[in-house]
Length: 369
Ligand SMILES: C[S@@+](CC[C@H](N)C(=O)[O-])C[C@H]1O[C@@H](n2cnc3c(N)ncnc32)[C@H](O)[C@@H]1O
Image 1 (cartoon, rainbow, N blue to C red):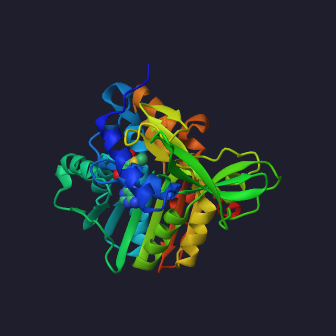
Image 2: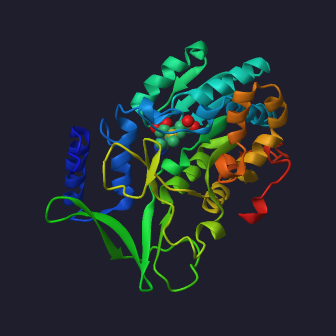
């Protein structure tokens, strides 16, 4: 039995087919990913599906750290409080706020520390998630703003959890020693299909060996970081995501790349199927992030695993104060086989003397970037 595509998938597929035709028959994967995730009303982040939550029965597709345990946001808040103080700034900007869980955790903790900012601004491409954020954050509505674009200049502390991995990537495929860019075409039966075209584009480092190799490059994510650097005149930024430094990202053995889809808490590798119904994501190349940041005037404050970052921010004391069940959820944030090692945190500063930031006090791996 074949699955009948949902009306949402059919509508999005028609939209993609139009773009393929407009592009002359071949659409780069980055443009395809942008449509699949963000096309107004249809793309995964722009439609009404549930997306977040702990269990697939609620219709959710994945779970993120702030949805697992409020301890995540409470500990990030400790770093944010320090950064607000060190940079003498009074605003927080969050990129990709999901259900608003992280914002609520940060604001609750800052309120408890007597360190609430003057404003908390959310930038999120998803209109439906923005509505969920508004509902969840009513206790702080006097501080909250939503922005569609960055101002011309900004003094603030910026945060983003699992937002860089959602930025469209280009796919590069080395076949028989020749590099190709992978794109999407329409097969004679009207279905979406892959097509590779020779390209001058290359991964940022040589991939040893002559074997066939699929990988991603992150022009859009890195352009996003550069734009932040050009906009932020004084402040700091903390991005948390799954990923690695360059030598691990482009390791010869990682020949299938990192692109995956998430639906109903299952992972698959076919972004052309079930359009609009699943998240599409690639790991972050944190070396590329750091280089783009430095090019734009940021200093790297630190880079470490999520486990080290949370421990440095006071995880042990938080765990001690929790009941057993909450404690085992919070421990997932740092356990090596859960989120502790795959997820990394990068800290950046701009327009201030870099300081020994709390979250990187032990286990800083900046030298490995
Ligand atoms: C995987 S979710 C993470 C949500 C939240 N930070 C969390 O940890 O639960 C990605 C979020 O980023 C948003 N997003 C994706 N691309 C974005 C972009 N280019 N600018 C701002 N937000 C974006 C999505 O709408 C969604 O809210």
